[in-house]
Length: 486
Image 1 (tube, helix red, strand yellow):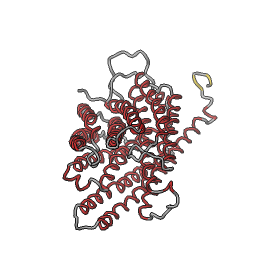
Image 2 (cartoon, rainbow, N blue to C red):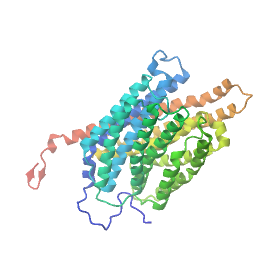
Image 3 (cartoon, rainbow, N blue to C red):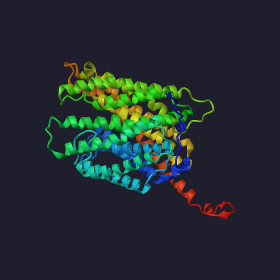
Image 4 (cartoon, one colour):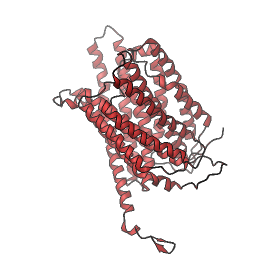
């Protein structure tokens, strides 16, 4: 197969009925709703990280704010997870997907007003769900925390966003499908199916109790390992070649990895869940281990592309996010396959190791890739440089260090915790004391990560203000153009 160029697909021989818009015209067509999605997504991430920091501190000082029911540990954690998954990852992933579809297809974003309405409805659903979770009205299921009151605005908002994305894809002036498009289109179609199915089955109340964890686990696995992972992998396939100014190493590896993840990833996630039929756990173990193959294919593809960097190329400010996210993805695949094996799962199945593994995927790969995408795309949408360019590298370093402290201590502490739980001679209290120092270290990671996102949000708002100021300067209202003024 031919190798595609990193910036735009290779020109096709098919004639096009319409002239392709320029990159500036493509960016300007959807700048308002996409920037709104970026700002709202980072704002939800800041709020969620703050709640996670408060919940982590309450592990050391449980009496702190104990008189406020909304700020108890049992409500802070689901609120943090919901804001990360739906407020940040899904929303920013959709924004990056829309931008990539319009850029690769050389088409203006269709119906930006409809897109803006969809964004507002989505955020209304996130806000409604967040307030209900703090009030104690949540589902009690991980990755499906949003209550029934959030289903309608979020689903309608997503439909509007998805329709705009598909219409933009249909209006493309470049017919070739770059690998990024495969993952983005799969995620766009996958989410409404799983969200509608899970919402109907879990909120209807007619399921037997034994089926509820199966449906909830199936939805959570598909949301993270197919939808959000699809957005992140698609972004990597676009930005990694672009940042290195070199064509993608292998289109064949990308296709192999695409079908491998699409076939195997939806059936994982049950290895650490024993309240389900045994055959579900066995199927999950097999598919989780086999997922290591497509993950290795993607990682190898990106590493080969990164190592072929042109000497004269200048890296974008967000390149460090992708360079760190790629090895995080490989480590997640290896540790996930290792932890899924029955002999190892018997040790780390119900420990902090599982939380560290989830955060390695969600924050270490998906989160860093989306943050890097925001850093690269935001200046292009606003057609303005970042106000403080030198601040971007410290922000990326702060985010990466935060993720390291959020994940590695949980992985190591979970292994030590599991070893202690396997020894009947060690009291449970002593096992908890052994693991507690590692859990305490995550507080530092959450603090650093939250601080980085606060600064990024302020920088993003300053970027938008700078762009607004530049476009509204009176001096630019009268520009000589072909002998006249406009």
